[in-house]
Length: 379
Image (tube, rainbow, N blue to C red; front, side):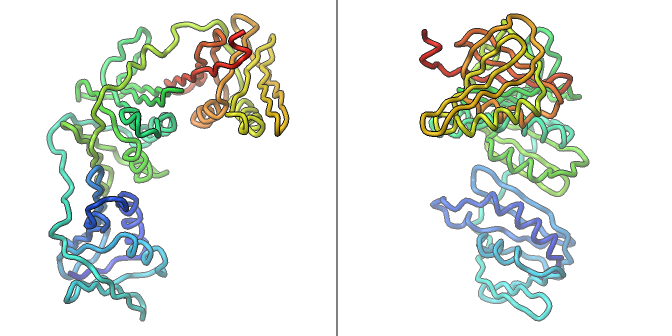
């Protein structure tokens, strides 16, 4: 096995798959990266048994072959190599000679025989979508995923394809995430002949997919779902993952059907106010009281050891001119960061009712955050 490729291409490929490698598995072989030189390209793969990725890297192959190299070792070396061409040659006793300019690395490698091959999801429901659009949908929901292992079914994003079943909702593709304290739902109308789909995709899989798509999205993202697996094909990358099995909560029951008060706020000003209030609130479980007085929204936080804050925002108000409810302000600011419109709509009802955030003149997006029961709220 022997090939020549640029440091930049080799680094991009190794960096992409190295994040997939598991360091906690009882199966040592999956701590390696598989290099396969075939004809005019190099294929670099990693597989942690839950998720796997392949990247095709441009290379001048003079001898075909395959070998495993410890991920930590090769990633540490490639990231520090100088710019230019890198020669990669497998010699006797599974020693890989990696040379550049006048310098040489000799690395102990392993035969590829026991490395688990990536499953190919060939038959199932197929979907093609703009990678830029799908990445934005993921970014507007993934922060609401549960990180608790006790809520395994909430460790992913529910993807729904088909009719929404809600009056006035014309979307046919929806991504939903919740951790039990807040819920983010993003909808879109796309062209699709894949029929109805309901699948829970692990958040880590979608994190890696967004990295692969990057900032300069082009071509189309091809998605195939079959049984308990899903695959994504984008340019020269192939990502495959297991789906999360289980019953996702009926999120439609959480969405309030009406609200007593609606406030239109400048998103940037609102975000900055929540971040300032959090400086005080962070030592008291991030609790901030949202107190509407006429056309002014007060964000009030108190901490015995730090101090207090009363942030005041101008608001366009529809409905009742009074409302008081406490939220975890961190959950509010995370949602505001995920939106990109100039103005947002904040919907409030009773002290113990959830708050609702939506962008104005933006994407089909709704964010629901549960209130925090305080001593004041129970009086």
